[in-house]
Amino acid sequence: MRPVLTSLILALLALPAWAQTQQQSDWCSSPHASDDQKVAGCTARIQLGREAAATLAADYNNRGAAYTAKRLYDQAIADGTHAITFEPDYAQAYNNRGNAYAGKGLYDRAIADYSQAIALNPDYARAYFNRGAVYSGKGLRDRAIADYRAALAGEPGMTKANEALIQLGATP
Image 1 (cartoon, rainbow, N blue to C red):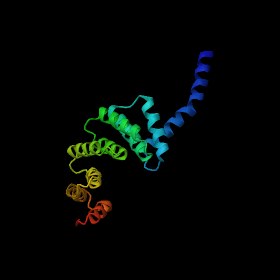
Image 2 (tube, rainbow, N blue to C red):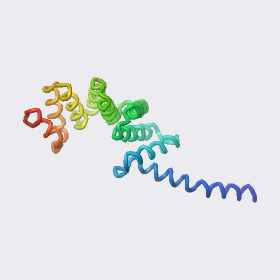
Image 3 (tube, helix red, strand yellow):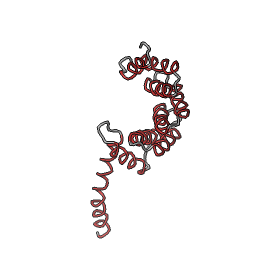
Image 4 (cartoon, rainbow, N blue to C red):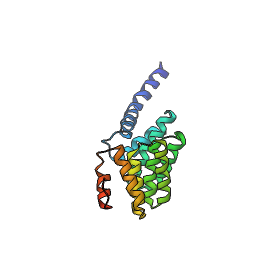
């Protein structure tokens, strides 16, 4: 009887910890969570160690995007690399890691990651836009214009791409 009672008490004591982990887990993929909540949520999910490779890739990708938003680029790059290790064809992970490289000023690496994202998903408008922004920053106007137009082809309502083309003196 005593071992059963001890087990029951331990289970009840662990319940609040599970609930906190579940709440944090939900933050990992929530569009309404703050960047700090996303980092905490994804970290909780990763540390559980019970996820399939595709889910782990998404967790690392989401945490990496939050790190980029927080300007913690080295952590973002590491998480992007982990995501790609779990899912080598994960276009969004390449795009997000490219954002971290761009944030660090490593523009050639950013272009390489955006290009890989586009190779994996030729209709990936955000990757075209991001690569166009880096090309523009490097003074490669014609390449930037081509990428902004490709972004608009994939996502016609992308206001940022329209504005970028106008800034470059090009028509959308």
